[in-house]
Length: 222
Ligand code: DC
Image (tube, rainbow, N blue to C red; front, side, top):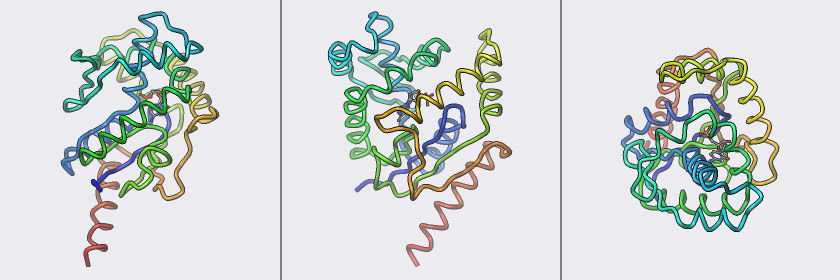
């Protein structure tokens, strides 16, 4: 079995930033599963397929070849990374991510990736569904206001015109949908280590996780 690290948590907790840094430290492939759900939302919206049109969505999902190149997501030879983080996609993605038939397909793809490579994978159901046997599982949280502030700063830095209150209400709404849906809701895996990043810098979080991984591996090899 390959080595894998699972990071779950709510929107804006810093999962992708942290996962990217951990991937460099431990030479792992970074798999951003949220980007895969965002891609389905992007393509469905472009083709005007609504979340209730399950059959069309399944056909659409099956027609997409996805792979990661560094931290870029390539879909049918097109780099979609810059399009999927648009606030409009953020507002609509939860409805598509709640569909069991889509989840089943993307989970299968994610598991195939983890069978091929050593990975750090972030999402909502990685420790509970996708990589139940991951060597390390973390559940990364932060207060909603702090997460909204981070997302606001990130989008402003990209030159987008955004409103803090609407980002906060979007995050609260998304937390609710992600943790109350029937199919693989966002919950902490029993064996995951919880890290609250509200008052920690990115480097402090990465150091904390790195120490945990290294200490555990050292104690196993003794
Ligand atoms: O992490 P993110 O904001 O890019 O995720 C986008 C959406 O996809 C969000 O609504 C949660 C959902 N998601 C999911 O249901 N399962 C995952 N493994 C990853 C993301």
